[in-house]
Image (cartoon, rainbow, N blue to C red; front, side, top):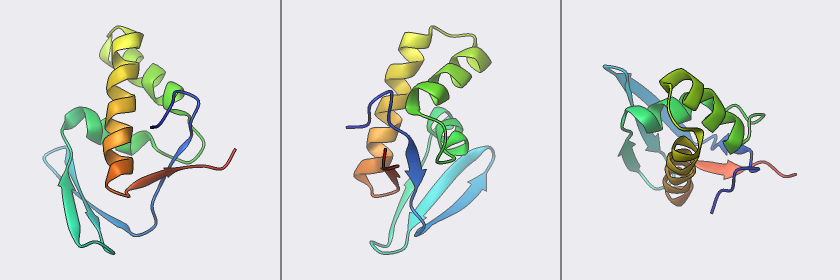
Length: 93
């Protein structure tokens, strides 16, 4: 489970395709694809190996004008899904 303090890092074996603002990720080793919804696409764009999950949530809450706690829960859920598909890991800390 990815926590607020975790720093997500995109897997190097992932290819990205953006169509109409939404992202499809392809994981080469498993030959699987995952189509991200708008929020998950926004989360993916903010993964840089430096920002924590909490940082990503704060940026999106500000951008969306939404409750930071609700956004934090959504961000952690999106990151857990990405992690479950081997698309992200957490930076060693």
